[in-house]
Every structure is written in structure tokens, then in C-alpha cells.
Image 1 (cartoon, helix red, strand yellow):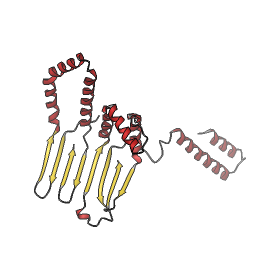
Image 2 (cartoon, chains in turn blue, orange; image 1 turned 90 degrees about the vertical axis):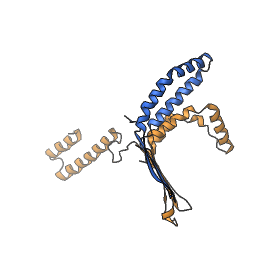
Image 3 (cartoon, one colour; image 1 turned 180 degrees about the vertical axis):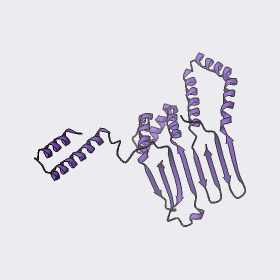
Image 4 (cartoon, one colour; image 1 turned 180 degrees about the horizontal axis):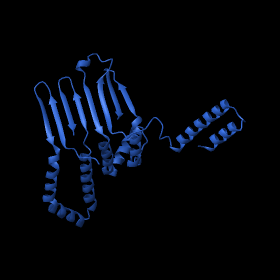
Amino acid sequence: MNWPPMLMHVKVKNERTDFGLWLPLFLLFPLALVVLLILSPLILVGILVMLALGQGRWVEFGFRCLWAAITSSWALRGLRVDVEGRNETVQVTVI
Amino acid sequence: MSENRKKILDMLAQGKINADEAFRLLGACGEEGQENRGHEDGGKRGPEIKTKPKYLRVTVTPGANCPDPSHADRVNVRIPMSLVRAGIKLTALIPPEALDKANTALKDKGINFDVRNIKPEDLEDLMEAMGDMQVDVESAKGETVKVFVE
């Protein structure tokens, strides 16, 4: 089973700044679920209106986009980008 | 024990062949048996056991011809294959009108290719085969670009 990304580490180092930032991605999932639950009545009304107007294909497209966004973010674990320039270094790591 | 080996040992016992001949024939039987086993396994027992690639790597490093390696740019990107797969699936969201535009643009460049013919299943096969791929490019500035999977 593929686990979702838990943490993201961003590090920027140049002549003026040198900072590292740990982003707790695991906290975003419960937050997104809560937001989805709160907005679900509105989403449901929107879907019903779209279906009544004969725009069902946009509802399907919306769901497919949402699913694609979820699967893409789920697959981010293991991503690593290191760019080392002449005066600046940027590192992004998803754990 | 195979039938052939039994026959050889019978012939040796009966004195029809001597020990040297028996040894040579048994050796030949052994090689034949190993070859047959290899075919039955479909080549799985071979020394090259292919593993599924996990990451697509892109690196840019200063090459041997780089005039100033200490100040050269370096890039090291590791992309999980699961993310590449997810990206491929995103292509299903591209509207047909956009694909038509892409086809027209390709045709204008002299490339007669229909991007609608690319199916996610084909790309999956391509990714399976990517384990053997390695691209090395050395630029005029002395930078080496490597694309490979691991």
C-alpha cells in the first residue's frame, strides 16, 4: 500500500536567508475532510442544479478532476528536488 | 533422474561404453537439462532479474569540460513513478479540442502524429520498459544531464 505524504521539507539558502520549513501534510488531510463535510450540502445542491440544467458532464468532469488531484497528491511521497545555483540552493523533499 | 541419464548408466554397466564416454554423455545431458529448465521458467532464472523502477531521476552536474565546476549549477530531481503514473492519468482530463490543437501544431511542424492514439495502457508498458533507459547529454557549457530510472 502506498502511504500518503506526511511531511514536506522546504529549504532555501542564499546570501540573505537560510531557512528550513517543515510542513505537516498529515494535518491537512483531516482538515480537508472537515472542510468537505461542511461544504457537502452546498456541493450537493450544486450537483443537483447542474444535473437539472443538463450539464451533467461538468459534474463528471469536476469529480474526475478532484479524483486526479487526490491521487496526484497521494503519490507525492518520495519526491525530491535539489537545485543548487551559483548563489542559491533550494531543496524540496516530500516524506 | 532423467531417462537419458538412466540409459547412459545402463550402457556403462553393460560395458557398451567406457567411463570417459559415460562422463562426456552425462555432461551433455546436464547442459541440455539446464537449457530446458531455462526455457520452462521463461528466462526468470537468468542473472538479470528486472525490478520495477521506483523513481525517475534527472540530474544536472558539471561535466569534465566545465570551466568552473565550483560555480556551476547542479540539479537533482527524484520523481516517484507513482506520481508519473498519476500524471499520465491526468491526460484523460485533456479536452478533445485541445488534443486537436496539439495534433494541428504537430502537423505544422511536419510531425504526422495523432496524440489521441496514446493510451494510458501503452504508457504503462513504456514505463515498465523504462528500467533499461538512460539518457546522457553533455552540453557545450560543460554540463552533464542524466535521465534515468532506479
